[in-house]
Length: 297
Image 1: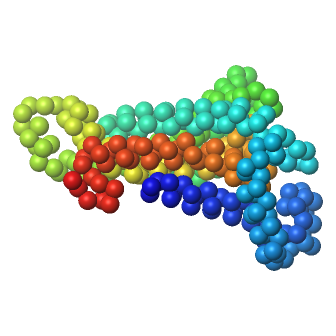
Image 2 (image 1 turned 135 degrees about the horizontal axis):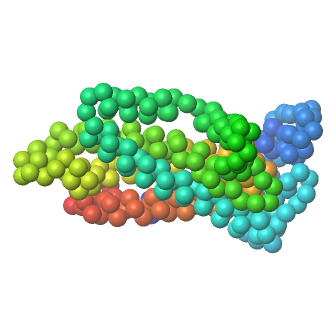
Image 3 (image 1 turned 30 degrees about the horizontal axis):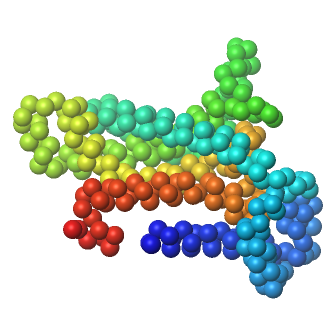
């Protein structure tokens, strides 16, 4: 029931947000944004309430599910599936790559000592300090410069009809990988102070074996709750990527969506992750004997 209440509250929030332009603009918001005419700006609570009612009504009328883009209407059923599939493939490829990279580098940092460890941590800190947009544009410029010097195109920067993966996945991997590395290193350092680590080493187990077989297994629960922040970072970066790489993904549709189309597209993006996190969280709580109210059985 708690999960259902959260879901209803989120859907309600999406409906209110989807019609928010109607509260301040009497004209169609896409028309205002395209033409730059802002003389309709004001405060229109009655129009806002009517827009909310219209959104709720259209959500129960699949035949009216459509999206206005550049003054042209598209049926959502014709475009949403392919675009959502493309965006999710880029997202999942980047997430898998970030986890693998973070796993390897966090092991290297934890096992390293002295100057090598400090150097690795400094490199991670430098990568963390770089803005997302700087990384994306920097990768594009490096590809262009390399192509001009060698004539070899590492990856397509922007296409109209084709799907590109290499550069978007590479750019989307950086921020979550850095966040995961710093989080894992911090959690592993805390784990090193616990008695079972000293006991395992006293039995002659190697540092690598203790780290992989014992420490990582015990930090998964803490890492899971921090991973929600990673998903939010990646989704916001995916929106920027699809604009800068001219990708035909589902995030690009959000820029043109209002009303019921915004609610539907946002739900398609959000709902799978919400269900996944809810399921995993319940399984993890059950495995450690935690009840829904936070107490232990």
